[in-house]
Length: 115
Length: 114
Image 1 (tube, each protein chain N blue to C red):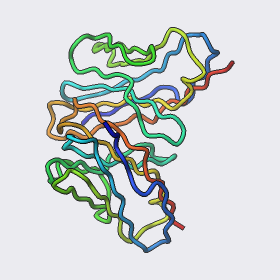
Image 2 (tube, chains in turn orange, purple; image 1 turned 45 degrees about the vertical axis):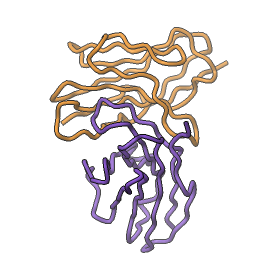
Image 3 (spheres, rainbow over the protein chains, first blue to last red; image 1 turned 90 degrees about the vertical axis):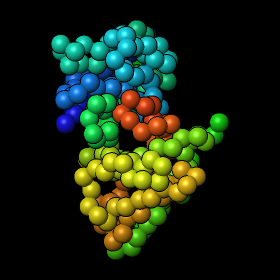
Image 4 (cartoon, helix red, strand yellow; image 1 turned 120 degrees about the vertical axis):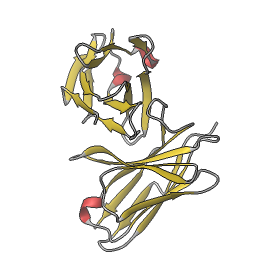
């Protein structure tokens, strides 16, 4: 069965500095990996996804993530944080090849951006 | 294209009552999944429907049930409500079933059980 661990429950950065949100996963099959963002009182929005193509995935709003199979990691990065990036971020894993196609969500990382 | 819509957005019920939540997926999407989000448990998968059939089910009691109609709209029902059922219930739709498909989420229904 698949699982995902977000290593930081809360990350705080200053505007204009880099963002790193860490995610480790486990999967019995070939995983699909996603990062979603949730702003207060809103639904989740997909930032990017990995589905066994290029290991460096570029998403919206300047975010990108690198799939590292040897480290079972899928960390989310952004070179320069913006105030509007403050939100909750979820790393998600899904087993493509398994019978159960439900997605496993990480506990979330709350990103705070200081002016 | 209109996004995923959920009704109602807010709901207050008392213990023992039942509730029905509704989700309209993006036009053309045939898969609808439901999730429960709470501060303590985070986001948990409830079930997925595809072409009017339940494809997957998470680890929730039988009080939680759902269905999907021929137009892909879905409803979720919770019977005999408990205080612990207070949560944000999110619906997500995708074109097809399968873990590699992007899911589009609705704004959620916030259920409060008193």
